[in-house]
Length: 593
Image (cartoon, rainbow, N blue to C red; front, side, top):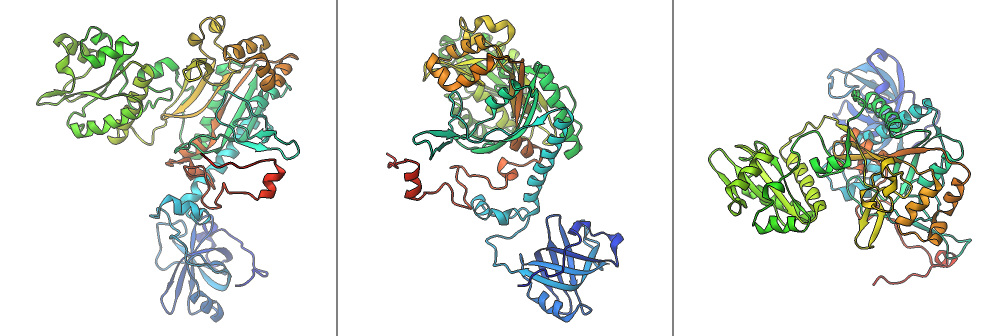
């Protein structure tokens, strides 16, 4: 192996152009492919921008030609030569019309045979790719996600800076507070038996910054939550965190619509229409069975409870008698495609969400078949068909449950499964909307108390403030989520700035005075010295990158992601630590029971 010596790269591969024919350049990178034809050797050298061909021919200095014979894939090289037109152009790459006639070659590093081929769309399992993530990231389509992420972060900083936001870092070692997901905790060596938490978000700090007279704050913030993983969730993730003072919901929504509009135009050249549509939480649930509805296709939920209000069919009767509902969706024109076998598969989908089964009616051109209509009267069948709008060629799919949350979740998931399977939406379409007026509280049956839907600092709707103690379940919040194609991009709220109202909220949530002071005393104290009205929101930065890059998982836009069990395969963490470290932290290990 050699050193660079006095040789220095002059150009990235794709910045060598036809206009430079005859000029001398120096390029550097990995050998992507080498072809020894005897009298001439062709090598593709790959750098972070792309690929360019090196040509070693009979005019090449002998020492460079001999070294070229040694080249293998993933060797690291630096080559000096003259730009020339290729005799056989390759129109599939940007540099396909030119090559470099090599005059000098340095082999900077040799490489063993890699565990998998370094190319796009390589057929290798995720575990192997993530174990050798540094190799996986050499692929151009792996680069794409991180380059998009870099560009989007710059656009965010420029946009918010232009709108008078100040970027402020908040602590990573913070106080563990209740009413959220599970914390990651960090033991303190200097204060035995005490712990920091890693922040689930900068929520309290950004509110305190509003009380510090920084009335527009932004941060691309690292956050941590110890929760189960899925395609769009990681234990450590990034938010674009925003807070503003002297604003209402529309001010915050308008500001953030502006960022989205700028980002999509600059990155994807897509014109996003603003303002985004608004939809209340209740309408989203009633129409789509989800508080993050995908509005690229119809197939809305239909409440047919009234149509079967007097039914003797036990499944529907039990649901209605116990305070639940009977609802359906109609798969328009899919009667020939949604066979009984396919419907059985969809039954498994709704059972995942707690439904006991899936009733159906297939209305083909030849006949109508149903799993439940024989138990209904002719009047009930006619009413159900009329209410649902079903006609020949359609399939009615019905879920009944004594818990409306089960009906919503099951049908919401069902409509998505059908839409994906039968390609009922345009994958290149971007449908944004705001979901507003979320419930302020929800009742936790296990804990037998109300908990905050968002967090305890969310302002109730003005008209619902008087109901905070008397009817918590009816209170709506000044909270809003930004939704894109069925994915929650981010959410936020107007915050409580009245200390008295904040204490009322804590009491409804079951906080004792002692617990209130222990967990949030510093915030309550701060509010005594004047707090402007304020609010904000946070985007899932990883999710935004994933959707804009049309990736399947946020792992594709994170350099070194975790896998399903929250471990990193490349380094092998989490791992054990030495007993000396445990002793310093006053930690004793116990066997898991």
